[in-house]
Image (cartoon, rainbow, N blue to C red):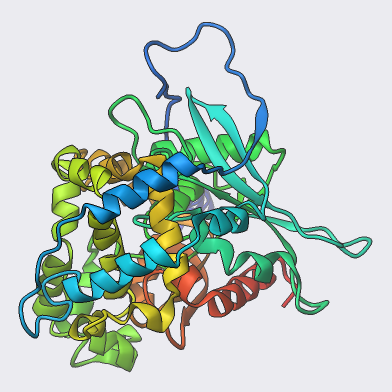
Amino acid sequence: QHPELQAGTYTMYVELAGAVILGVVIAAVLLKKKQETLKTQDGWWGVGTPLESPEDDSIRPFKVETNQEEIEDLYRRIDQTRSFHSLEDSRFQYGFNSSYLQKVVSHWRRDFDWRKQVDKINRYPHFKTKIEGIDVHYVHAKPKNLPEGVRSVPLMMVHGWPGSFYEFYGILPLLTEAASPEDITFEVICPSIPGYGFSEAPHKKGFDSVCAARVFHKLMKRLGFSQYYLQGGDWGWLITTNMAQLEPKIVKGLHVNFAPPAKPSLTMTLSMLLGRHFPKLFDFSEHDIKRIFPCMEKLVVDAVKETGYMHIQATKPDTAGRGLNDSPVGLAAYILEKFSTWTDHEFTNLEDGGLERKFSLDDLLTNVMIYWTSGSIISSMRFYKENFSKGLDQPHSKIPVIVPAGVAVFPNELMHTPKLWAKQKYHKLVTYTLMARGGHFAAMEEPELLAQDIQTFVKIVEKRK
């Protein structure tokens, strides 16, 4: 072939290859840009129209308080409750067993000391600050006696429903007081989701998980943090996941102990169809197979049985919530039933729902009292409507998480997520741990196990392991 023709052909191929490579690079950049970041706009959740003047960004110390009038009102309502017999041999299969509820109520009325629990709550510093028109409450637990030259690592931990910041009181000392020189010492910020506990409820419609994520980023920036870690379960899982999607350069790592499957991908669908017969093909463990097969029973029927509350709260929260806001006994039954069933589904077959196997009544009732004294049950239930009313096809459901992620899989969690499924959402999955025991309220039920897994995850990300 003629040399000039060969040179021309070679040049054409080089240009073609260059164009293809450039196209791939541009597509990758655009795709990456499209996938990486969740978009959001500032909101205003206060009463009326937004203020024209700049928002007060001061941080105010806050203390939980009580008084005799509040306690006497509680006692009066408890004394006037109307009991209703459970069916014979029904245990917790119809909900909270009435016979055991009498024991809980008796303890609440005679032995539970709310003033003492308030003192316990106030052991850690509490603060409030106004963000997007509403007061946001948070606990700020700083390490004491840090060795010289050692810096603490900032970590935000976010609760869910029907929990509160109090869920973290067992794990806070394990994170803020290093057990050995090799351990990381954390500075932990535990906010109350707006509408929960001592955070003000939004006054306008539409406050969903992405709004909470945006507000919590503003909180961390206001506290002076430029980068930080996140941890969450239940709604805290979604809020912290959204935070990682919003600001991937700011979030150093995300650790979750609840990770419901993302939108079904082809890989997930194939694993559901073939995984029972070819588990190694999908890296399924024995626990994976036990929890997800047969799929119709484990992923659909069981889910329907346990999500009646969700349908109510995602449609008419104000109707059901009104009764709970008036009756402390009704509120306790509604909340504590979840601490039974979601800790271990087998507890439905026990007369006492297994509640005191994992928790103390004082801790459980303290969580109930946070809802009762703040009058926040209705606004906490609305969070379901705000998230589900926008449909299941929200932008965040399609965007992967590209920050380093760790998933702690507790064996009795409500919904199980195999490693393959977790990787569909969390593209940089650093740790995936099948925990030795535990259920949905991991921080409260198994603080040592959860703290250990958080340590392991952060050490790897920080390259200390």
